Amino acid sequence: MATKAQIARSNKTPKESTRSVNRCWRCGRRHGYMRKFNLCRICFRELATNGQIPGITKSSW
Image (cartoon, rainbow, N blue to C red):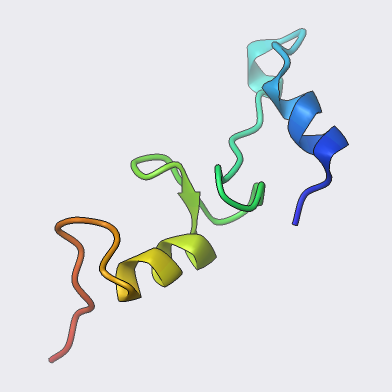
């Protein structure tokens, strides 16, 4: 989990545009981020298995 200071720092506009950091809106994680859902891979999997993300189903073959 990201600290409040890390989340606040990532919300500020950076000096250069390449310094912007995408963070998960649930836990604040910055790695494994999915832009389409604004979630990290861990939170995405939790919400998808609970059926809270519409249109996402667990694949099986």
